[in-house]
Amino acid sequence: MSITSAEHALKVIKSGDKVYVHSVAGAPQHLLQEMVKLADHLQNVEIYHLHTEGDAPYTRPEFEGIFHTNAFFIGKNVRKAIAEGRGSYIPVFLSEIPRLFRQKIINLDVALITVSTPDKNGFCSLGTSLDATLAALESAKVVIAQVNRFMPRTLGDSQIHVSKIDYLVPFDQPLHQVTWGTPSEIEQRIGNNVASLVEDGATLQMGIGSIPNAVLAALENHKDLGIHTEMFSDGIIPLVEKGVITGRFKKKHQGKIVSTFLCGTQKLYDFVDDNPLINMLPVDYVNDTAIIRQNPKVTAINSAIEIDITGQICADSIGYRMYSGVGGQMDFMRGAGLSEGGKPIIAMAAGTKDGESKIVSHLKEGAGVVTTRAHVHYVVTEFGIAYLYGKNLVERAKELIKVAHPDHQERLEQEAFERFKHQYSQGVYMYV
Image (cartoon, rainbow, N blue to C red; front, side, top):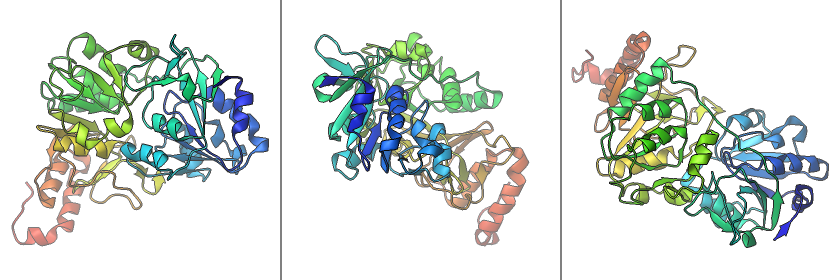
């Protein structure tokens, strides 16, 4: 272990190396900015990461051929680079990424991480993002850590001793913050519809964004909710403060909020700092369906880019254009489906900002199916709740058309009739 400057530590990176970057708010911005300053001496460096917040300087056009990003999940900061060929997308379940590192399917040379300042015993915390980072630093040949006093000290499995780090680079800078405005009327209606499905004592998984925040805001009158989720943001704080989130009925980590990464405002980072309520655990554990299903009434709330009338969920691309990733949607949709009393939910606005329907007769050409039609139970829009589980294809179409935007329902009904004409001709099914 050596305490040194970023310039000195980063010289260990060689042409052709595979470099891992800490996830989400944990992306070590100082190390990344210093790394690209070494570009004149490098070529064909492969960068691997999940979703990251903040700048991704290695994706700039001037670094083409020097750095190539490989995203397990595509964030806004790398989307253009991947679309233009300076990066690539690796489809994989979030729960399986650690296996890629540990089994040397991706043989990492260097891991760039952010940690909290060491405590009196020499332990740092990975803070806001544990996810696959623990597997990455245990697998990489060299670990370089930006030691940042702004990184909160989270508990669980996020503690690592300085002896596990090859280079410590002290550099303090505030973590990237993400905020969402007040939910729109449409988002509030979606949130209320989803909340009506959540039972007291349920264990929640949700993403971060306007719709999850709207759902959380509609849960103030619920009781004894638990949290076992891959990620969370500020929206859970009021429910903890009001005693709505207690984790009382959870079978795994009773009374604890379990997650693998988080992102939000400084209020959130202060909330999780040294908070024994928060249990940060690796993603191959948190997103393991065998673990998820043990909790009662797991209610998994995820979203979609579009859904066809049979229930196929596209959540990672807009046609051929990659937009996000597989992520943990399938991990939790399946885990919720296997949980006693569980509810896998897809929540989304019925239409796009351009007025197109997100419920379609056929997915766009090139669109990827992230969650299969067999895994979907509930689809929620601002117009209501469609229940698909146990229904045949025609019945599913009928359910989904009911929650589509009224401007598109007649067209969808006609397209459904054309698709399933042989069944209608037998007089078996009727649309009313």
